[in-house]
Length: 441
Image (cartoon, rainbow, N blue to C red; front, top):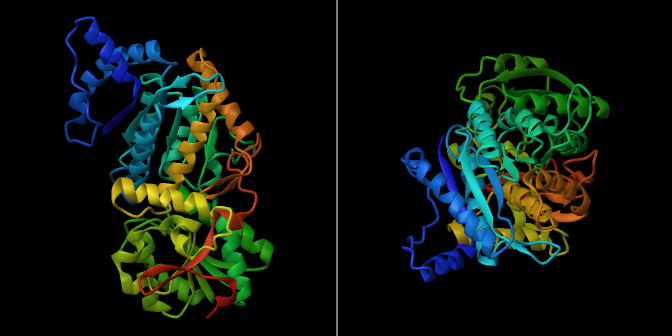
């Protein structure tokens, strides 16, 4: 597991100056940590330095706060996790430039952001959050690039009564599927697959489809796409005539014969990369003219570049950020989306995708939670109050992924699915806004 540590504390400079005045040897200022093969070997030195840095920061200002971040920077979901990691690094730098966060009592607190790589593995994700909570003693965690990784982290966050803001899409991340109750300590920023299914239903009804097939990856994410799709389609009178799973890495799809023989008039594919493109390529050999709709797991550049000819004409439900240049200025999310995109491009030299924005929204929530903490609280008190602050202060909040109002029984908070997503179509190798008046054309 790789570990990236960004110490966000402009107050450290003051602490070093005070040390110099006391005629102690001055330590060289550290550069922001970057991903390196020897991260594990460097780790003990970082941990030994942290107490001294924190003590100096406390002397100069308020109690330092810590945000833990777990992303899939490597492995099968790295097309999501790399941009999420870069977003966390960007926000860490912004916090450093601002001197940290200032509480309601006027006390400013430096913020340390500790970033760990899940390697796209649920077991590694669980180990990472356990370490962040119990060893690094973070105040809250942003993490889980995927639904599977997030679900592996949920029990640990819950047991340790620490807020986890997930970047996974499955609704079961925030709501116990057996009891139906909202998980007290778990929140999430991405749209849920029921909202994806609402858009799919609207489109299929508009073009006169009454029978649909589902092909989905054999993960918690894919299963959630199917579960929500079946429920929404049944309510709308659209029959799911065939459904089958595949592995995300599959290149052969024997189930296409059954799809062709099922009589379905459209196909929904619920998968991340590369499964989404591979399944679509296989489908074209059997039913080249059937409408294909994708879930939100493909809303990035990787989908467009793997097999450009295959994905041309594909329809998907994606966050507005993906077609931000086509949004009207009257859109309530217009300013925040464009500001985030400008900041991200200035920081990384790249354009943001719809996974980077999941991280940004989640980090802003945690900052809101910290900005409303009084100084002097113990760690357990801070963790509990951050949780309460999310439900208290995130109200009608325009983020990049929707208009959010968090409540005790709603830890996503998007009341209108049209603010979280829009329908897009791949045209000439790019995602294009697909307005209702053009559906079916």
